[in-house]
Length: 445
Image 1 (cartoon, rainbow, N blue to C red):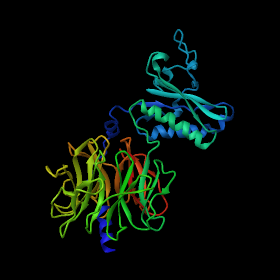
Image 2: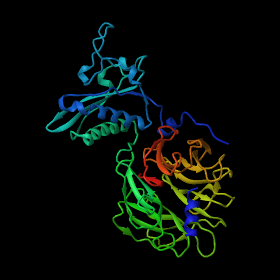
Image 3: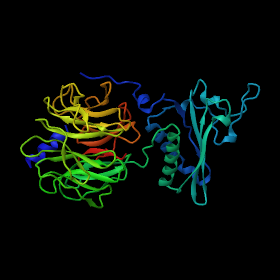
Image 4: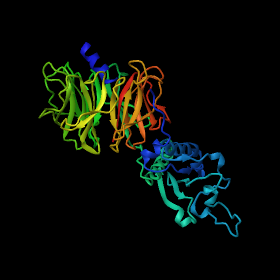
C-alpha cells in the first residue's frame, strides 16, 4: 500500500501576469462582438423560449470566441426573419436595419436571429447569422438553417446547441457539444474511471474493478482508453475500448512501476513510465499491445508523464527529477535533444499539449508552499508563460478541450478535489463534479 500511495502522490503533484490577448492568440484571430437578442416562439413553442435563449447565449459565450454584446444596448425593434430587415429610405428608418446592430450603441460585428414554432409535433428553429457590418442584407447573411427537436427540455437544448455549434463552425471553432471528459472518482468506494458530458451532465461509472484506477488517457481517435490499475496487485497498464465494454491485450513488463500511459497520435505506440531491475522509473515506448518495449530515457531519476505533440509525433514533453524536484522537459521521440522547459524552481508536473501543438498547460507550485499548485500555460518555442489560476486551492492535471480554448483541471478550491473547467485565459471557471473526490480529467479529442 505504501508503494501505491507514493506512486499516486508523485503523479499529482514569482508569478506571471495574465496576457489579455491569449484568447485571440489561441483562436487565431481578433475577438469579434456578437449580438444574440432573445428569440420568440409562436404558440406552443413560446413556453420553451426562456430555456432556449439561455442555452443559446451560454453556448456561444462559453466558447470564448466572441465578446457578447450587452442585451441592454439592443434596439427595441428586433428582426426575427430576413424579410423583417428594412433598408432606410432618404436617411429615414423604415424598420430594423443592419446599422442598428453595428452602430455606435451595440457595436456588433455579427448578429444571430430567428424564431421557433411547433410543427408536426416537433420544435422547429429557424435560425440565421448575419455579418451586420455589410452594406446590404444579401451580403450580410452568412447562413440560414432549420433545426428540429422534441417539444421538451432536451429538444429545446438540442436545437439551441446545434445552432450555436454552426455559428462557431463559421469561424473555424470546434464546439464542445458532443465531447466527453473522463476522470477518476472514488464515489463508488474505489478509485474508478468515470465519464461525463463536457458540461458535467450525464456522469456515469465506466470501470467496476473495485481497485485503484488512475491516470486515464485516450487514443487520438477516442476509440481506446488506457489507465494505470492495480488489478495485478502491483501497478500496470490496462487498455479497454473507450466505453469500457471490453478489455484489450496489453503485456505489462514485470516491474514495481508501470504507469502514465500515453498513445502516440497514430495509435500505434504506447509511451509509459516503468523501471527495469533496480533502477529508476524512466520513459519507455512499446507497441500498443505492450510488445517491443524500448527505453527512451536513461536518467538516474524518476521520469514519467510522457505526452506526445499531437502535431509532431517526434516531440515529447515529460516530467523528470534529473535536476532535483520534478520539472517539465521536452525531447525527441528517440530520447535525443533533451531540454528543460521550466526554470528549475519549485515542482512542475502534468504537462498537456494544446491541440495546435505549440503550447502546453501544466501544474507548477512556483511561489507556493510544497504540495500546492497553480495552472500555467507555456508557449514552448518562446518559453512564454501565462498563469491561469492564482492560489485558489491546489490546481493540477490540466487537460485541453477539443476546441483548444477550454481546459479541464482538478482543484481543491472548494475543499475536496473536484473537476472544473475554465477558458484558457483563466475566466469562466465552472465546477463540474461534487460527489466524492474527482481528479485526473482527460477530454475527448
